Amino acid sequence: MDGPVPGWLADTVLYQLYPQSFADGNGDGIGDLAGIVDHLDHLAWLGVDTVWITPCFVSPFRDAGYDVADHFTIAPRYGGNDDLAALVDAARGHGIRVLLDLVVGHTSDRHPWFRAAIDDPDDHRYIWADRSEPPPGFVASPGTRPGGYLPNFFDFQPKLNFGYGRANPAEPWRQPVDAPAPRANRAAVREIMDFWLGRGVAGFRVDMASWMVRDDPEWVETARLWQEIRGWLDATHPDAVLMSEWGDPRIAVPAGFHADFFLHVGGDGNGRPLRSLWDTGDGVRRDDWGRLDCYFDPDGRGSPAAFLAAWREAVDAIGDAGFVALPTANHDFDRLCCGRRTAEQLPAAFCFLLTWPTLPAIYYGDEIGMRYLPDLPDVEGSVTVPGYNRAGSRTPMQWSGGPGAGFSTAPPNRLYLPPDPDPRRPTVAAQRADPGSLLHVVRRLIELRRHTPQLGARGSVRVLHAGYPLVYLRGDRFLVVVNPRRAPARIGLPRPVRGTPVLGGGVRLADGGTGAPAGGRPASSGPGGDAAPNGGGPGGAGGRPGGDRVLADGFGYAVLLLDEPYPPA
Ligand code: TEU
Ligand code: CA
Image (cartoon, rainbow, N blue to C red; front, side):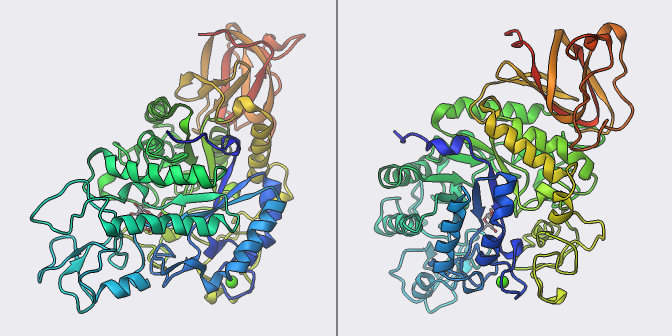
Protein backbone atom coordinates (compact mmCIF):
# COMPACT_ATOMS: atom_id res chain seq x y z
CA MET A 1 0.00 0.00 0.00
CA ASP A 2 2.43 2.68 1.16
CA GLY A 3 5.65 3.10 -0.75
CA PRO A 4 9.06 2.16 0.56
CA VAL A 5 10.61 4.21 3.34
CA PRO A 6 13.30 6.59 2.03
CA GLY A 7 16.62 4.93 2.77
CA TRP A 8 18.10 7.95 4.52
CA LEU A 9 15.56 7.83 7.33
CA ALA A 10 16.86 4.62 8.92
CA ASP A 11 20.30 6.11 9.51
CA THR A 12 19.32 9.58 10.53
CA VAL A 13 19.88 11.33 13.84
CA LEU A 14 17.24 13.99 14.32
CA TYR A 15 17.67 17.32 16.00
CA GLN A 16 14.64 19.36 17.00
CA LEU A 17 15.10 23.06 17.30
CA TYR A 18 12.81 25.73 18.53
CA PRO A 19 13.58 28.69 16.26
CA GLN A 20 12.67 31.33 18.83
CA SER A 21 15.48 30.17 21.08
CA PHE A 22 18.21 28.65 18.95
CA ALA A 23 20.19 31.59 17.63
CA ASP A 24 19.34 35.23 17.07
CA GLY A 25 21.03 36.43 13.90
CA ASN A 26 19.85 40.05 13.93
CA GLY A 27 19.99 40.89 17.63
CA ASP A 28 16.30 41.52 18.23
CA GLY A 29 16.15 38.96 21.04
CA ILE A 30 14.31 36.25 19.11
CA GLY A 31 15.99 33.46 17.20
CA ASP A 32 15.73 33.43 13.42
CA LEU A 33 16.63 31.46 10.31
CA ALA A 34 19.86 33.38 9.71
CA GLY A 35 20.90 32.42 13.24
CA ILE A 36 20.32 28.77 12.43
CA VAL A 37 22.47 29.10 9.30
CA ASP A 38 25.26 30.57 11.44
CA HIS A 39 25.23 27.49 13.64
CA LEU A 40 24.93 24.71 11.09
CA ASP A 41 28.59 24.00 11.63
CA HIS A 42 27.81 23.05 15.24
CA LEU A 43 25.11 20.65 14.07
CA ALA A 44 27.34 19.14 11.40
CA TRP A 45 30.18 18.77 13.90
CA LEU A 46 27.79 17.08 16.31
CA GLY A 47 26.78 14.72 13.53
CA VAL A 48 23.02 15.18 13.40
CA ASP A 49 21.69 15.13 9.88
CA THR A 50 17.99 15.99 10.02
CA VAL A 51 16.73 19.12 11.68
CA TRP A 52 13.07 19.62 12.57
CA ILE A 53 12.14 23.24 13.05
CA THR A 54 8.95 23.93 15.02
CA PRO A 55 6.51 26.24 13.16
CA CYS A 56 8.12 29.28 11.60
CA PHE A 57 5.17 30.63 9.62
CA VAL A 58 3.19 33.85 9.88
CA SER A 59 1.35 33.74 13.19
CA PRO A 60 0.10 35.90 16.05
CA PHE A 61 2.26 33.61 18.23
CA ARG A 62 -0.30 33.00 20.92
CA ASP A 63 0.80 29.35 20.82
CA ALA A 64 4.42 29.91 19.83
CA GLY A 65 3.59 29.62 16.13
CA TYR A 66 1.31 26.59 16.39
CA ASP A 67 -1.39 29.10 15.52
CA VAL A 68 -0.63 29.55 11.84
CA ALA A 69 -2.18 32.51 10.01
CA ASP A 70 -0.45 31.92 6.65
CA HIS A 71 1.02 28.52 5.83
CA PHE A 72 2.91 29.82 2.80
CA THR A 73 4.93 32.60 4.38
CA ILE A 74 7.78 32.53 6.89
CA ALA A 75 7.07 34.77 9.89
CA PRO A 76 8.91 38.07 9.40
CA ARG A 77 10.63 37.72 12.76
CA TYR A 78 12.40 34.64 11.42
CA GLY A 79 13.18 36.10 7.99
CA GLY A 80 11.43 35.54 4.68
CA ASN A 81 10.80 32.63 2.35
CA ASP A 82 14.18 33.37 0.76
CA ASP A 83 15.85 32.85 4.11
CA LEU A 84 14.18 29.47 4.40
CA ALA A 85 15.49 28.58 0.94
CA ALA A 86 18.94 29.80 1.99
CA LEU A 87 18.78 27.70 5.15
CA VAL A 88 17.74 24.59 3.24
CA ASP A 89 20.63 25.14 0.81
CA ALA A 90 23.21 25.82 3.47
CA ALA A 91 21.99 22.84 5.48
CA ARG A 92 22.30 20.59 2.43
CA GLY A 93 25.88 21.82 2.09
CA HIS A 94 26.45 20.49 5.61
CA GLY A 95 24.73 17.18 4.84
CA ILE A 96 21.66 18.18 6.85
CA ARG A 97 18.01 17.84 5.83
CA VAL A 98 15.34 20.20 7.05
CA LEU A 99 11.87 19.15 8.24
CA LEU A 100 9.17 21.74 8.80
CA ASP A 101 6.23 21.46 11.16
CA LEU A 102 2.94 20.82 9.39
CA VAL A 103 0.17 22.34 11.49
CA VAL A 104 -3.03 21.59 9.63
CA GLY A 105 -5.44 20.28 12.25
CA HIS A 106 -6.31 23.89 13.02
CA THR A 107 -5.33 27.42 12.11
CA SER A 108 -5.02 30.63 14.05
CA ASP A 109 -8.23 32.54 14.54
CA ARG A 110 -6.46 35.28 12.56
CA HIS A 111 -6.20 33.09 9.46
CA PRO A 112 -8.11 34.60 6.49
CA TRP A 113 -10.09 31.36 6.16
CA PHE A 114 -11.37 31.79 9.67
CA ARG A 115 -12.01 35.52 9.25
CA ALA A 116 -14.22 34.61 6.28
CA ALA A 117 -15.97 31.75 8.06
CA ILE A 118 -17.10 33.80 11.07
CA ASP A 119 -19.48 35.80 8.87
CA ASP A 120 -20.55 33.14 6.40
CA PRO A 121 -22.94 30.39 7.55
CA ASP A 122 -22.25 28.44 4.34
CA ASP A 123 -18.53 28.18 4.98
CA HIS A 124 -17.58 24.74 6.35
CA ARG A 125 -13.80 24.89 6.41
CA TYR A 126 -14.14 24.84 10.18
CA ILE A 127 -16.64 22.98 12.32
CA TRP A 128 -19.56 25.21 13.22
CA ALA A 129 -22.60 24.62 15.32
CA ASP A 130 -24.94 27.14 13.74
CA ARG A 131 -27.34 27.49 16.64
CA SER A 132 -27.89 30.25 19.13
CA GLU A 133 -26.29 28.44 22.06
CA PRO A 134 -22.95 26.78 21.15
CA PRO A 135 -22.83 23.18 22.42
CA PRO A 136 -20.29 22.12 25.08
CA GLY A 137 -16.75 22.23 23.78
CA PHE A 138 -17.54 24.87 21.17
CA VAL A 139 -16.42 28.49 21.34
CA ALA A 140 -18.91 31.30 20.74
CA SER A 141 -18.72 32.85 17.30
CA PRO A 142 -16.67 36.05 17.20
CA GLY A 143 -18.46 37.18 14.00
CA THR A 144 -21.94 37.80 12.65
CA ARG A 145 -22.47 34.08 12.19
CA PRO A 146 -24.52 32.62 15.05
CA GLY A 147 -23.43 29.69 17.17
CA GLY A 148 -19.82 28.70 17.65
CA TYR A 149 -16.84 26.78 16.35
CA LEU A 150 -14.90 23.76 17.55
CA PRO A 151 -11.37 24.54 18.78
CA ASN A 152 -8.54 22.03 18.38
CA PHE A 153 -6.19 23.02 21.21
CA PHE A 154 -6.43 26.55 22.60
CA ASP A 155 -9.69 28.39 21.88
CA PHE A 156 -7.91 30.62 19.35
CA GLN A 157 -7.03 27.52 17.30
CA PRO A 158 -10.22 26.65 15.40
CA LYS A 159 -10.26 23.08 14.17
CA LEU A 160 -10.19 22.59 10.41
CA ASN A 161 -13.01 20.39 9.21
CA PHE A 162 -11.85 16.95 8.08
CA GLY A 163 -15.22 15.45 8.87
CA TYR A 164 -16.43 12.95 11.47
CA GLY A 165 -16.11 9.21 11.64
CA ARG A 166 -19.74 8.90 12.76
CA ALA A 167 -22.85 10.83 11.86
CA ASN A 168 -25.50 12.02 14.31
CA PRO A 169 -28.66 13.76 13.02
CA ALA A 170 -28.81 15.84 16.20
CA GLU A 171 -25.36 17.28 15.39
CA PRO A 172 -25.54 18.47 11.80
CA TRP A 173 -21.95 19.80 11.91
CA ARG A 174 -20.74 16.19 11.72
CA GLN A 175 -20.00 16.08 8.02
CA PRO A 176 -18.76 12.90 6.35
CA VAL A 177 -15.06 12.87 5.56
CA ASP A 178 -15.73 13.15 1.85
CA ALA A 179 -18.06 16.17 2.04
CA PRO A 180 -16.85 19.14 -0.04
CA ALA A 181 -15.25 21.13 2.80
CA PRO A 182 -13.27 18.22 4.28
CA ARG A 183 -12.13 17.36 0.76
CA ALA A 184 -11.08 20.96 0.15
CA ASN A 185 -9.09 20.90 3.39
CA ARG A 186 -7.34 17.70 2.36
CA ALA A 187 -6.40 19.35 -0.90
CA ALA A 188 -5.09 22.34 1.04
CA VAL A 189 -2.86 20.06 3.12
CA ARG A 190 -1.29 18.71 -0.06
CA GLU A 191 -0.89 22.20 -1.43
CA ILE A 192 0.98 23.36 1.68
CA MET A 193 3.21 20.29 1.63
CA ASP A 194 3.90 20.66 -2.08
CA PHE A 195 4.80 24.32 -1.65
CA TRP A 196 7.55 23.65 0.91
CA LEU A 197 8.73 20.38 -0.61
CA GLY A 198 9.20 22.35 -3.82
CA ARG A 199 11.52 24.61 -1.83
CA GLY A 200 13.71 21.71 -0.84
CA VAL A 201 12.52 20.64 2.57
CA ALA A 202 12.85 16.91 3.29
CA GLY A 203 9.44 16.42 4.88
CA PHE A 204 7.36 17.30 7.91
CA ARG A 205 6.68 16.64 11.52
CA VAL A 206 2.89 16.62 11.60
CA ASP A 207 1.22 18.36 14.52
CA MET A 208 -1.67 16.59 16.30
CA ALA A 209 -1.79 14.02 13.53
CA SER A 210 -4.26 11.74 15.30
CA TRP A 211 -6.83 14.50 15.75
CA MET A 212 -7.83 15.15 12.15
CA VAL A 213 -11.17 13.34 11.86
CA ARG A 214 -13.34 13.63 14.95
CA ASP A 215 -15.28 10.83 16.66
CA ASP A 216 -13.27 8.36 14.65
CA PRO A 217 -13.23 4.99 16.45
CA GLU A 218 -9.91 3.18 15.96
CA TRP A 219 -8.74 6.11 13.78
CA VAL A 220 -10.14 4.41 10.70
CA GLU A 221 -10.94 7.60 8.79
CA THR A 222 -7.92 9.47 10.09
CA ALA A 223 -5.76 6.64 8.75
CA ARG A 224 -7.52 6.80 5.38
CA LEU A 225 -6.84 10.51 5.26
CA TRP A 226 -3.12 10.15 5.95
CA GLN A 227 -2.79 7.14 3.67
CA GLU A 228 -4.30 9.18 0.86
CA ILE A 229 -1.80 11.97 1.52
CA ARG A 230 1.01 9.45 1.83
CA GLY A 231 0.04 7.91 -1.52
CA TRP A 232 0.27 11.32 -3.11
CA LEU A 233 3.59 11.99 -1.36
CA ASP A 234 5.09 8.67 -2.47
CA ALA A 235 4.10 9.40 -6.05
CA THR A 236 5.26 13.02 -6.14
CA HIS A 237 8.07 13.31 -3.54
CA PRO A 238 9.31 9.77 -2.89
CA ASP A 239 12.32 10.93 -0.88
CA ALA A 240 10.27 13.00 1.58
CA VAL A 241 9.12 11.82 4.99
CA LEU A 242 6.17 12.35 7.27
CA MET A 243 6.71 12.00 11.02
CA SER A 244 3.70 12.23 13.25
CA GLU A 245 2.97 13.77 16.58
CA TRP A 246 0.69 10.88 17.51
CA GLY A 247 2.42 9.20 20.44
CA ASP A 248 1.44 5.71 19.34
CA PRO A 249 3.71 4.40 16.58
CA ARG A 250 1.89 1.07 16.49
CA ILE A 251 -1.15 2.92 15.10
CA ALA A 252 0.48 5.91 13.41
CA VAL A 253 2.87 4.10 11.08
CA PRO A 254 0.20 1.78 9.64
CA ALA A 255 -1.92 4.93 9.31
CA GLY A 256 0.53 6.35 6.79
CA PHE A 257 3.51 7.85 8.60
CA HIS A 258 7.14 6.94 8.08
CA ALA A 259 7.76 7.35 11.78
CA ASP A 260 5.98 8.36 14.94
CA PHE A 261 7.36 9.69 18.20
CA PHE A 262 6.89 8.15 21.58
CA LEU A 263 5.64 11.19 23.47
CA HIS A 264 4.73 12.30 26.98
CA VAL A 265 1.11 11.83 25.89
CA GLY A 266 -0.73 9.53 23.49
CA GLY A 267 -1.35 5.81 23.12
CA ASP A 268 -3.10 3.50 25.54
CA GLY A 269 -0.83 4.47 28.41
CA ASN A 270 -1.11 8.25 27.89
CA GLY A 271 2.59 8.65 27.14
CA ARG A 272 3.75 5.96 29.53
CA PRO A 273 6.40 4.39 27.27
CA LEU A 274 8.32 7.66 27.08
CA ARG A 275 7.55 8.89 30.57
CA SER A 276 8.60 5.54 32.04
CA LEU A 277 12.08 6.35 30.75
CA TRP A 278 12.41 10.07 31.39
CA ASP A 279 9.67 11.55 33.57
CA THR A 280 11.15 12.48 36.95
CA GLY A 281 7.93 14.22 37.98
CA ASP A 282 9.97 17.36 38.68
CA GLY A 283 9.00 19.31 35.55
CA VAL A 284 5.64 19.72 33.83
CA ARG A 285 2.75 17.82 35.43
CA ARG A 286 -0.67 16.75 34.25
CA ASP A 287 -3.45 15.55 36.50
CA ASP A 288 -4.15 12.55 34.29
CA TRP A 289 -0.60 11.19 34.53
CA GLY A 290 -0.57 9.60 37.95
CA ARG A 291 2.57 8.55 39.76
CA LEU A 292 5.39 6.86 37.97
CA ASP A 293 9.02 6.01 38.73
CA CYS A 294 11.08 6.51 35.62
CA TYR A 295 13.96 4.26 34.70
CA PHE A 296 16.48 7.08 34.23
CA ASP A 297 16.09 7.99 37.89
CA PRO A 298 19.16 8.54 40.07
CA ASP A 299 17.64 6.52 42.92
CA GLY A 300 17.00 3.60 40.61
CA ARG A 301 13.35 3.12 41.42
CA GLY A 302 12.16 2.57 37.86
CA SER A 303 12.27 -0.19 35.33
CA PRO A 304 12.74 -0.27 31.57
CA ALA A 305 9.97 -2.89 31.28
CA ALA A 306 7.11 -0.57 30.27
CA PHE A 307 9.20 1.02 27.55
CA LEU A 308 10.50 -2.32 26.28
CA ALA A 309 7.02 -3.82 26.08
CA ALA A 310 5.54 -0.82 24.25
CA TRP A 311 8.50 -0.64 21.89
CA ARG A 312 8.20 -4.36 21.12
CA GLU A 313 4.49 -4.05 20.47
CA ALA A 314 5.09 -1.06 18.20
CA VAL A 315 7.82 -2.66 16.10
CA ASP A 316 5.79 -5.84 15.75
CA ALA A 317 2.91 -3.77 14.36
CA ILE A 318 5.14 -1.65 12.14
CA GLY A 319 7.48 -4.23 10.64
CA ASP A 320 9.53 -2.67 7.83
CA ALA A 321 6.95 0.04 7.15
CA GLY A 322 8.60 2.68 9.32
CA PHE A 323 10.10 3.58 12.66
CA VAL A 324 9.55 4.53 16.25
CA ALA A 325 11.21 7.86 17.03
CA LEU A 326 12.57 8.37 20.52
CA PRO A 327 13.09 11.98 21.65
CA THR A 328 15.24 13.19 24.53
CA ALA A 329 12.56 15.82 25.14
CA ASN A 330 10.54 18.30 23.14
CA HIS A 331 9.09 21.79 23.33
CA ASP A 332 6.06 20.44 25.24
CA PHE A 333 7.81 18.32 27.87
CA ASP A 334 10.72 18.44 30.36
CA ARG A 335 14.26 18.35 29.21
CA LEU A 336 16.43 15.35 30.14
CA CYS A 337 18.16 17.47 32.74
CA CYS A 338 15.30 18.19 35.09
CA GLY A 339 14.97 18.25 38.87
CA ARG A 340 16.57 15.23 40.49
CA ARG A 341 18.12 14.03 37.24
CA THR A 342 21.36 15.91 36.92
CA ALA A 343 24.07 16.19 34.29
CA GLU A 344 26.11 13.20 35.52
CA GLN A 345 23.28 10.89 34.49
CA LEU A 346 23.01 12.13 30.94
CA PRO A 347 25.82 10.17 29.27
CA ALA A 348 24.02 6.94 30.18
CA ALA A 349 20.76 8.36 28.81
CA PHE A 350 22.38 9.34 25.52
CA CYS A 351 24.14 5.98 25.32
CA PHE A 352 20.74 4.33 25.46
CA LEU A 353 19.16 6.82 23.02
CA LEU A 354 21.90 6.37 20.46
CA THR A 355 22.27 2.60 20.61
CA TRP A 356 18.62 1.58 20.79
CA PRO A 357 16.88 0.57 17.51
CA THR A 358 14.67 3.65 17.28
CA LEU A 359 15.19 6.95 15.49
CA PRO A 360 17.00 9.17 18.00
CA ALA A 361 15.78 12.75 18.26
CA ILE A 362 17.86 15.23 20.23
CA TYR A 363 16.06 18.30 21.51
CA TYR A 364 18.28 21.36 21.09
CA GLY A 365 20.45 21.99 24.12
CA ASP A 366 20.03 18.51 25.54
CA GLU A 367 23.38 17.64 23.95
CA ILE A 368 25.04 19.92 26.51
CA GLY A 369 22.64 19.09 29.33
CA MET A 370 20.67 22.33 29.44
CA ARG A 371 18.15 22.06 32.23
CA TYR A 372 14.39 22.54 32.41
CA LEU A 373 13.91 25.90 34.11
CA PRO A 374 11.01 26.01 36.56
CA ASP A 375 8.83 29.02 37.33
CA LEU A 376 9.18 31.01 34.13
CA PRO A 377 6.46 33.39 32.95
CA ASP A 378 3.83 32.25 30.46
CA VAL A 379 5.37 33.18 27.13
CA GLU A 380 3.46 32.72 23.89
CA GLY A 381 1.04 30.22 25.37
CA SER A 382 3.69 28.13 27.08
CA VAL A 383 1.31 27.46 29.99
CA THR A 384 -1.44 25.09 28.87
CA VAL A 385 -2.97 24.41 32.28
CA PRO A 386 -1.70 25.64 35.67
CA GLY A 387 1.45 23.70 36.54
CA TYR A 388 2.18 22.85 32.93
CA ASN A 389 4.68 25.44 31.77
CA ARG A 390 6.50 24.50 28.60
CA ALA A 391 8.68 27.63 28.77
CA GLY A 392 11.14 25.74 30.97
CA SER A 393 12.17 23.67 27.97
CA ARG A 394 12.19 26.60 25.55
CA THR A 395 14.96 28.82 26.93
CA PRO A 396 17.77 30.22 24.76
CA MET A 397 20.45 27.87 23.54
CA GLN A 398 23.55 28.32 25.65
CA TRP A 399 26.31 28.85 23.13
CA SER A 400 28.78 30.63 25.36
CA GLY A 401 29.15 32.79 28.47
CA GLY A 402 27.80 36.29 28.93
CA PRO A 403 24.34 37.71 29.53
CA GLY A 404 22.93 36.63 26.17
CA ALA A 405 24.55 33.17 26.39
CA GLY A 406 25.86 33.69 22.86
CA PHE A 407 22.25 33.31 21.74
CA SER A 408 21.65 37.01 21.17
CA THR A 409 23.35 40.38 21.42
CA ALA A 410 20.07 42.00 22.54
CA PRO A 411 19.84 43.37 26.10
CA PRO A 412 18.79 40.62 28.53
CA ASN A 413 15.31 42.09 29.03
CA ARG A 414 14.59 41.76 25.31
CA LEU A 415 15.35 38.06 25.05
CA TYR A 416 12.51 35.71 24.13
CA LEU A 417 13.02 33.88 27.42
CA PRO A 418 15.76 34.30 30.03
CA PRO A 419 18.77 32.03 29.66
CA ASP A 420 19.56 29.75 32.58
CA PRO A 421 20.89 32.17 35.25
CA ASP A 422 23.08 29.50 36.91
CA PRO A 423 26.70 30.69 36.59
CA ARG A 424 27.70 27.05 36.09
CA ARG A 425 25.23 26.54 33.26
CA PRO A 426 26.63 24.36 30.47
CA THR A 427 27.63 26.02 27.20
CA VAL A 428 28.61 24.74 23.79
CA ALA A 429 31.87 26.70 23.88
CA ALA A 430 33.01 25.24 27.19
CA GLN A 431 31.98 21.72 26.30
CA ARG A 432 33.59 21.79 22.89
CA ALA A 433 36.86 22.65 24.60
CA ASP A 434 36.50 19.72 27.00
CA PRO A 435 36.86 16.27 25.44
CA GLY A 436 35.30 14.75 28.56
CA SER A 437 32.09 16.78 28.24
CA LEU A 438 28.61 15.48 27.54
CA LEU A 439 28.74 17.20 24.15
CA HIS A 440 31.75 15.11 23.16
CA VAL A 441 30.10 11.95 24.48
CA VAL A 442 27.03 12.64 22.35
CA ARG A 443 29.20 13.36 19.35
CA ARG A 444 31.18 10.15 19.79
CA LEU A 445 27.97 8.14 20.20
CA ILE A 446 26.52 9.61 17.02
CA GLU A 447 29.72 8.91 15.14
CA LEU A 448 29.82 5.34 16.43
CA ARG A 449 26.20 4.79 15.43
CA ARG A 450 26.85 6.26 12.01
CA HIS A 451 29.71 3.84 11.35
CA THR A 452 28.11 0.82 12.96
CA PRO A 453 24.95 -0.42 11.23
CA GLN A 454 24.43 -2.95 14.04
CA LEU A 455 23.75 -0.05 16.41
CA GLY A 456 21.23 1.64 14.11
CA ALA A 457 17.45 1.64 13.85
CA ARG A 458 17.34 -1.48 11.67
CA GLY A 459 19.80 -3.70 13.55
CA SER A 460 18.69 -6.51 15.83
CA VAL A 461 18.52 -6.22 19.59
CA ARG A 462 18.43 -8.77 22.37
CA VAL A 463 17.87 -7.66 25.93
CA LEU A 464 20.02 -9.66 28.35
CA HIS A 465 18.99 -7.80 31.49
CA ALA A 466 16.06 -5.40 31.86
CA GLY A 467 16.86 -3.66 35.13
CA TYR A 468 19.88 -1.95 36.66
CA PRO A 469 21.97 -2.19 34.60
CA LEU A 470 20.14 -2.50 31.31
CA VAL A 471 22.22 -4.84 29.18
CA TYR A 472 21.53 -5.58 25.55
CA LEU A 473 23.19 -7.00 22.53
CA ARG A 474 23.11 -5.22 19.17
CA GLY A 475 23.89 -7.55 16.31
CA ASP A 476 25.84 -10.43 17.84
CA ARG A 477 28.94 -8.50 18.86
CA PHE A 478 27.97 -5.20 20.48
CA LEU A 479 27.13 -5.35 24.15
CA VAL A 480 25.58 -2.17 25.54
CA VAL A 481 25.46 -1.56 29.29
CA VAL A 482 23.58 1.35 30.81
CA ASN A 483 23.27 2.02 34.54
CA PRO A 484 21.34 5.25 35.01
CA ARG A 485 21.18 5.04 38.81
CA ARG A 486 23.66 6.42 41.32
CA ALA A 487 24.31 3.04 42.91
CA PRO A 488 26.50 0.51 41.17
CA ALA A 489 24.91 -2.56 39.63
CA ARG A 490 26.07 -5.97 38.52
CA ILE A 491 24.62 -8.92 36.69
CA GLY A 492 25.81 -12.37 35.78
CA LEU A 493 25.92 -13.65 32.22
CA PRO A 494 25.23 -17.30 31.39
CA ARG A 495 28.80 -17.67 30.18
CA PRO A 496 31.97 -15.57 30.12
CA VAL A 497 32.52 -13.12 27.30
CA ARG A 498 35.53 -11.08 26.32
CA GLY A 499 35.38 -7.72 24.74
CA THR A 500 36.87 -4.32 24.30
CA PRO A 501 35.08 -1.11 25.22
CA VAL A 502 34.63 1.11 22.21
CA LEU A 503 33.01 3.88 24.19
CA GLY A 504 31.82 4.68 27.66
CA GLY A 505 32.87 4.82 31.28
CA GLY A 506 32.44 2.86 34.49
CA VAL A 507 31.64 -0.58 33.07
CA ARG A 508 33.75 -3.74 33.37
CA LEU A 509 33.53 -7.38 32.56
CA ALA A 510 34.89 -9.57 35.32
CA ASP A 511 35.00 -13.11 36.40
CA GLY A 512 32.31 -14.05 38.91
CA GLY A 513 34.52 -16.54 40.69
CA THR A 514 36.81 -13.80 41.93
CA GLY A 515 33.99 -11.64 43.16
CA ALA A 516 35.54 -8.53 41.68
CA PRO A 517 33.80 -5.59 43.30
CA ALA A 518 30.97 -3.98 41.38
CA GLY A 519 32.00 -0.53 42.34
CA GLY A 520 30.87 1.83 45.03
CA ARG A 521 33.14 4.41 43.59
CA PRO A 522 32.18 6.99 40.98
CA ALA A 523 32.33 6.13 37.29
CA SER A 524 35.98 5.42 36.72
CA SER A 525 36.75 8.19 34.33
CA GLY A 526 33.67 10.32 34.60
CA PRO A 527 31.23 11.07 31.84
CA GLY A 528 32.97 10.67 28.54
CA GLY A 529 35.91 8.80 29.92
CA ASP A 530 36.78 5.47 28.47
CA ALA A 531 35.41 2.35 30.00
CA ALA A 532 37.98 0.61 32.11
CA PRO A 533 39.72 -1.69 29.63
CA ASN A 534 39.95 -4.43 32.18
CA GLY A 535 37.84 -5.55 35.06
CA GLY A 536 40.96 -6.06 37.09
CA GLY A 537 39.95 -9.66 37.65
CA PRO A 538 41.83 -12.62 36.30
CA GLY A 539 39.49 -12.65 33.32
CA GLY A 540 41.79 -10.12 31.79
CA ALA A 541 45.06 -11.70 32.76
CA GLY A 542 47.24 -12.25 29.78
CA GLY A 543 44.42 -11.59 27.35
CA ARG A 544 41.35 -9.53 26.67
CA PRO A 545 39.22 -8.30 29.55
CA GLY A 546 36.37 -10.62 30.12
CA GLY A 547 34.28 -12.71 32.45
CA ASP A 548 30.76 -13.72 33.24
CA ARG A 549 29.89 -10.64 35.28
CA VAL A 550 28.96 -7.18 34.05
CA LEU A 551 29.90 -4.59 36.64
CA ALA A 552 28.62 -1.08 36.24
CA ASP A 553 29.47 1.87 38.43
CA GLY A 554 26.78 4.40 39.26
CA PHE A 555 25.84 6.30 36.10
CA GLY A 556 28.12 3.97 34.12
CA TYR A 557 27.56 3.16 30.49
CA ALA A 558 29.49 1.46 27.74
CA VAL A 559 29.40 -0.06 24.32
CA LEU A 560 31.65 -3.13 24.21
CA LEU A 561 32.78 -4.99 21.13
CA LEU A 562 32.88 -8.70 21.96
CA ASP A 563 35.71 -10.85 20.68
CA GLU A 564 33.33 -13.60 19.65
CA PRO A 565 29.70 -13.51 18.55
CA TYR A 566 27.44 -13.82 21.58
CA PRO A 567 25.83 -17.28 21.55
CA PRO A 568 22.29 -17.29 20.15
CA ALA A 569 19.43 -17.55 22.64
O1 TEU B 1 0.91 19.43 20.94
C1 TEU B 1 -0.26 18.74 21.21
C2 TEU B 1 -0.30 18.06 22.55
O2 TEU B 1 -1.19 17.30 22.77
C3 TEU B 1 0.70 18.25 23.63
O3 TEU B 1 1.95 17.85 23.41
C4 TEU B 1 0.51 19.39 24.57
O4 TEU B 1 1.25 20.51 24.22
C5 TEU B 1 0.92 19.06 25.98
O5 TEU B 1 0.31 17.88 26.34
C6 TEU B 1 0.54 20.13 26.95
O6 TEU B 1 -0.71 19.88 27.54
C7 TEU B 1 1.09 20.08 19.71
C8 TEU B 1 2.34 20.95 19.76
O7 TEU B 1 3.47 20.15 19.96
C9 TEU B 1 2.15 21.97 20.82
O8 TEU B 1 3.30 22.75 21.02
C10 TEU B 1 0.98 22.84 20.41
O9 TEU B 1 0.69 23.76 21.42
C11 TEU B 1 -0.26 22.02 20.10
O10 TEU B 1 0.01 20.88 19.30
C12 TEU B 1 -1.25 22.83 19.31
O11 TEU B 1 -0.80 23.02 18.00
CA1 CA C 1 16.18 37.68 15.53
